[in-house]
Image 1 (cartoon, rainbow, N blue to C red):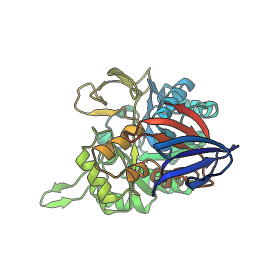
Image 2: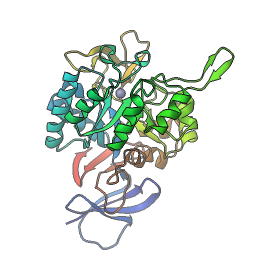
Image 3: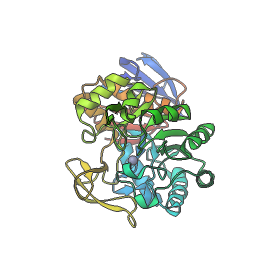
Image 4: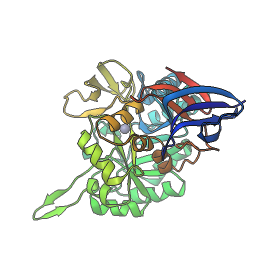
Length: 389
Ligand SMILES: [Zn+2]
């Protein structure tokens, strides 16, 4: 028996008012189009509400009081379930720069959690944020564990975790271009992050397999003046070259004016919305911990963002994907279908995932129902309702 959802569809390439999405027992979309008068199956009538593909978050560290570096199954499942309630149906749990021992514990627990995950966002792979970074751009990453990429090191890491889907690296480091090639040859997305790369380094990175800029603007260079000459930085390269960019659209890391400008300059097909959220996402204001409970650093949640103890830098965000989309529409003045596209079809395309991110027959039934304020009313993953608000 199939389930038929009635509502206004955002595919996200078009809006289809009074449309229908039908889902079969295997959790696959079988029909997307005008509402049919007669068809078999149960009707769930969300007339007046919006139906879109589930949101995809390519960069997050936790939520609901959990950080993936806690390396417990509960942490992965708790964060996955909290984010699913806010519209995330696919996510890449992201590590922090850590000891190999802690990283391997993160892998081992991820594998178990992925198997046991029934009510949370899907976790088709993991994202490594570190340890190959520029110390000068470390941000909230732990400097003690930052090293240069060496084949014997990254081959060991990859052997331990074949599910690595994405790796953020400072591409100006010795050995980083070889790593770019290596990752690309294995189908892993190579991303540039926490880096001192300037424009010329970015060109080399692009030629050697790096295609995405990790949290655009944060942890990277802008244009500088060296004596009489202006030298474009990685931010400039982000606009000038064929990079995809991901943006923390929580309304704190980047001002709304800039979020609007990035959207206009790059287009919805090149920009992915990410939360980069920490354990404080979905939690009340107060003291929190960045990274694992045992070895992490203290930080504070206030004003809807997570700050380092000196309040001079952000430790990360506490956003959820529904808030990102709402911000882009309400404050960054982006049309709703494009805001949804940056949280669905674009991240799927960046990762090369062809089974999600769009409402179309044959794809996984990962879909959302939300109202015009982007309040999630229902989250469906693989045809199963995991949240009803
Ligand atoms: Zn991050």
